[in-house]
Image 1 (spheres, rainbow, N blue to C red):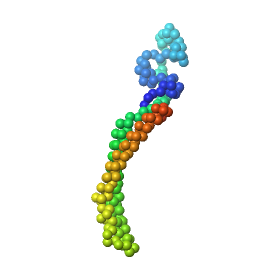
Image 2: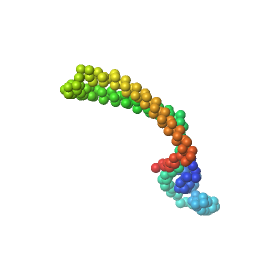
Image 3: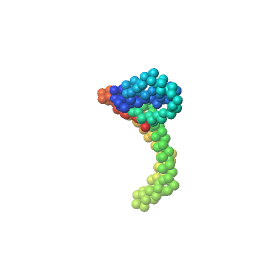
Image 4: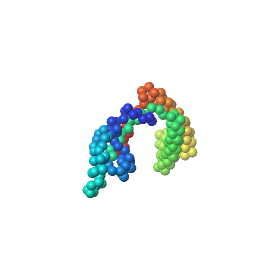
Length: 183
């Protein structure tokens, strides 16, 4: 991300850093005008601070939220490929586990046996059709694993191509402009 100082919110220019105020708290505070000039001279300040009037601690207002305008102008294709690869592997593992749990649920409920009975009651030859053998756990998990491996490769390649296309389009139009703020 690159910082674009021309697009910064004008409110940020007048904000004083809160940490700098705390570091300067040991020195006496001097009232200053908008142009950052002291309102009283050093001589008047010495006269005023030498008096017997105890000074009260000054309460500082809470710092205002800052806003920063940034532009996302370039995405590193290699980092996009690595992140996409890892996320697609996680998605593939989730698919394999979900397919195993779904098969176990369908087997416990007896869906495969009911479909086999339904086919045999309609008069079709059900001797060659046994869904419990056709859709065994090992067959289902093997098919889902192969599908997940192919999906990992395809998704990683496609998202990397999208990142490269984003870089080309971003060089033409300037990228995505985002305004961040700490609230």
